[in-house]
Image 1 (cartoon, rainbow, N blue to C red):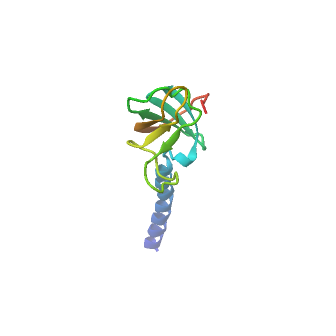
Image 2: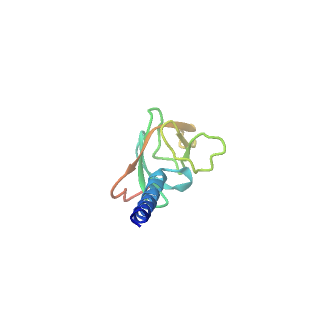
Image 3: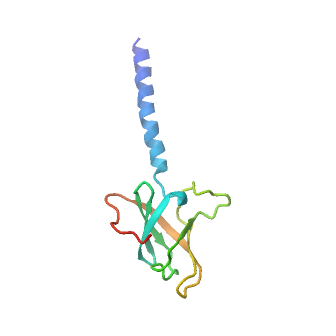
Length: 124
């Protein structure tokens, strides 16, 4: 009887931990969940997903004029990626040509979740 109680308790604990691990994996920026962004400067964006989570996206040097585009594309570069893959280092932000700037493909250096209140105003 004691073994049955221990086995039951163990299964309950494993069940409680499993959703937490799955939720931790879900805590990433995916292109199919992007709701908007705020341009901090040409090397830093704050991106907000549809759930309201904010992410600090740091870009490599070389992109300019990020304040002007009405659209940005976020991608992993993987063929057939339907937006379900997490955006991470070495993925890219595509900036369409506009305002005298050519089309740009900006390399992402890092994507970090922002904990606490996100930005109050978004560009898009």
